[in-house]
Image (cartoon, rainbow, N blue to C red; front, side):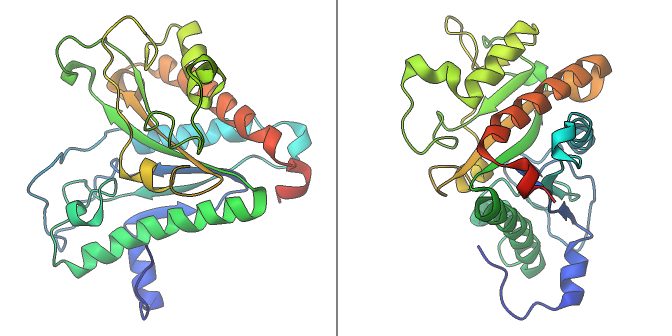
Length: 271
């Protein structure tokens, strides 16, 4: 998924008005595709699919960055900083978590270029992490409203999407070892904190998502040594309960750092 040749530096700078991004010093990539509120009228509107904004996901990602920094230990010498790619555009203009044929009205060259720019940045950061650290973890951040869950499903505050672990691991994981996976560790820790999470309750009907196009495209089933997980946060975490948000993000940052740290030599690789 490459940008077409011949795009000028001026156009690249223009894309940065829509897509905020930066390369970090730790092999985690944060993606926020649906939090933007910029309504750029030169881009045609999408007329089908989900069009709403995942409110508060950009602010949530920024808060998560702060916990990565503050939780860094002295052995790292510098603060941990993940790479990130954030869309500022409204989802009704471009949905970056859909394949190109569904992401924007076909025929809009500018929409196509911006879409490709978003995914090109993710790809570059993932490839950089694999080359430098031999591992990369992409965390795709989304939001949902608890009252909109389908009838009969358990009320939760976090939903994990991993395509049945296929986006995290290239080889099948035995069910008896699910608790050892990143998904299992997230579930176990949030259950201890009494933060309802799915999948996390074997005896009740779960509202479980497999993860979208981003998780699939940059996960272990598609790219060796690359992992991807979609994390959906409820409106209670994103907007309504500040203390819950702090507790959730601090716990999540600790878990993600601990998951990656054993696989890399921080004193050599972070610079």
